[in-house]
Length: 210
Image 1 (tube, rainbow, N blue to C red):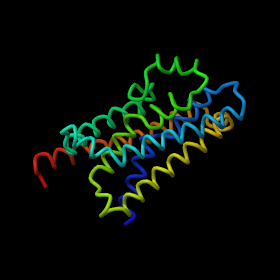
Image 2: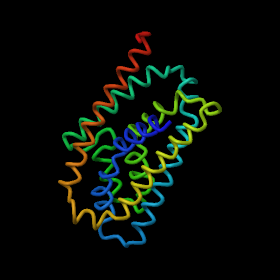
Image 3: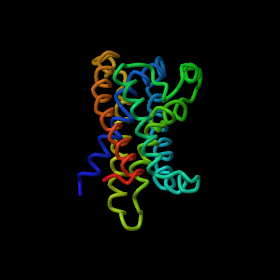
Image 4: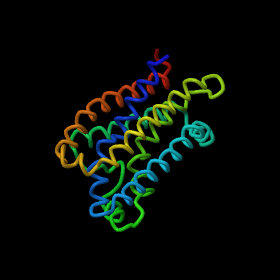
């Protein structure tokens, strides 16, 4: 009963990587008031939640409408998560989340809650792919309990992201950029292994191999 939600929580936590939001949020809100930082963090998490729930509820139907099999998306999602894991392991600027030009633009914006925080840093391509991979095979009517458990895991990860953003300034003084990168590398190794497993599962399902 708890095994699948726990696995999903681990995968989703690693993909969203709330720890990486600490230096990002600190840099984007440098010199801003505490009220502004609090408002941006809360709005970002709420917007990300809306995006993720929409994908959880309608993602499978969208894939079906586009004629994309879940196996094909599982393989692509695994490859996407593998690329993300490589960026985490080598502590590189995440091209799977946003480009340097987009990041520079975000620093000039008065409202950073939707872009780049909610999308693409929290509810980015990796997070959306993970949502579709796990929620896609579920039948809401027959598996409502598991659906709710997955949503609970999403809420827990988003709550963690919110807390870390609200505490970004004191945390940066303690762990620094190097500490955040070390944590990201460790999580990247786990994500890489999980991504390979997604690809293998997709290939087995596509070719009917047990």
